[in-house]
Amino acid sequence: MSKPLFASPGVDVAAKMADSEMLNRFDAMAWETTALGPVETWPTTLITTVRTMLASPVPMVLLVGRDAILIYNEGYKVIAGKRHPQCFGASAFSSWPEVADFNRVVIDTVMGGGTLSYEDQQFTLYRNGTAEEVWLNLHYSPVVHEDAVVAVLAILSEATKRILAERALARSREQLSLALGASGIVGTWDWHVEENRVYSDQRFSSLYGADIENPEEGAPISAYLSGIHPDDLEAVSRAMQDAMATGERFSAEYRLLQKNGAVRWVLAEGQPRLDTEGRCTRFPGVAVDITAQKATAEAHARSEMAFRTLANAMPQMVWSTRPDGFHDYYNARWYEFTGVPDGSTDGEAWNGMFHDDDQERAWAAWRHSLETGDPYQIEYRLRHHSGIYRWVLGRALPVRDEKGEITRWYGTCTDIHDARMAMAEREIVAHELSHRIKNIFSVLSGIISLSARSAPETRGFAEQLRKRIEAMGRAHDFVRPHSRTSRPVDMETTVFGLLQRLLEPYASENNELRINFSGDDTPIGDSAATPLALLLHELATNSAKYGALSHAAGRLNVVGRKAGESYSLDWNESGSPHPLSPPDVDGFGSRLMKISVEGQLGGTFSRRWNPEGIEVSVTMPIASISRSSKLAQPQ
Image (cartoon, rainbow, N blue to C red):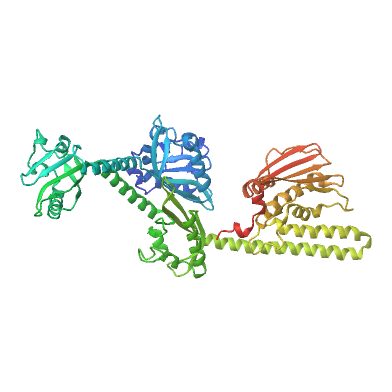
């Protein structure tokens, strides 16, 4: 069993959470038998997030790893229904099969570093054994440890009662409108002012707690006013008097005290009738019970307050806007980072916080998102409270209603300044290292040329060796990672052109045709050149060490094929000196090839070991091969 989650000395949270079912369940879980392993091996960021989540009353759930293992708190247990406790520690995909596709989109997006937010998202769930229409508010954020996303944090609240109550209220208001133009509707009254008699139906009398045997026969208005909550009575009486004096429509929401001590809310509306002298003679109207709607509205307000509290606890800057892009909310992190007064960056004033060189670009990107509904993502320099500008990553997603209309935008700003500076430093080191390696190639070529002058009989061999070293130097430019500034100007080429350059070092000494290209060629963009070069360079070096290119009798045949939007490349070796067989475990080179093809280019990669040599088949989207860094670089 793992160490208790709140076992740290000096932390009194454990005592407060002693009766927490979910904490006890977490501590009792044999995590070492699951895919997550012992808790002691978990990233510290994940442990901290679990602690925060279990201590929070707001429904929250963690989806850990690509398998989306569920860890949740007491609040989420209610939403899970009868799926609890079986889904605790299990995959979200198997625990909630009816929304597995939705959860896969969440995992793919947020594990990739994105965020998602949904308001009043409708689902059909079987959480209690039968189909149930459910509406949820969902906010997904990545849990980052060092440079990797290890889990997805979901903050959620159920809006089902509010949605149903709002629909009921809409129906009630429709009935209210009909009641004002017709008679005989339950919940109505008719006050004859001069007689001081109120005639009503039985339901209206019961709602107001009036102890009247036959309300249709009339009773003094005091019998009804006595049921109004004392804190609301003065305001209701004043509103009724104003309506009776002016003839204006009367409308008020107030509380009624029930005989059992309960409190109910009503919406009362009426239309005074004035005589020719302007005196009110009759005051008919209708009352609708809105207790459920009021309770839901209050719960929604509490949920909103909880969201703001959690937003203020997040390490990122969080903001939101109206559909037109007007910024009306920032969390505490924004004001701590920028040091500006509360409310000073509402509206369009936020753009003034950006570096002068970034303002036009940031504003253009934001306008594009507002006009199209596309997700907003941009890197820019934001003024820190110290006066310096720091690089941040800005992201935002729209929330849409059931008609697809945008109701709000939610966004975050993440400080990436240190990571960006570290990346720049790594690029300088990589550039310097590449420069030195190329110098080594040049020095070797010079040594070989000098040595050949003193030994004329080796001149042919030396010239061949020198050309191979120069070819390896040119291939090196493609294999190493590049930034936009370090990338060679002639990086854009074709697949066959790149192959010919990378395979130059392995050509036969007598220029015998041992490497053949056939089929379709296709252009490649500079963004795809590096992963393609890594793939082809690895294949070539393996062949030179173990396969067909390791001796003069070996042959290599490369075939390219275009089919619709895809491009396939077949690498077929023959004449290998020794039979080849699959390795027991994939080495670094094999993993590198799969990452280059499947991860960076979105393609497929397969190998077959034949007696004559290895066969490799690669299929990639043409759009991935031809993409340019000018489009791929974040703005």
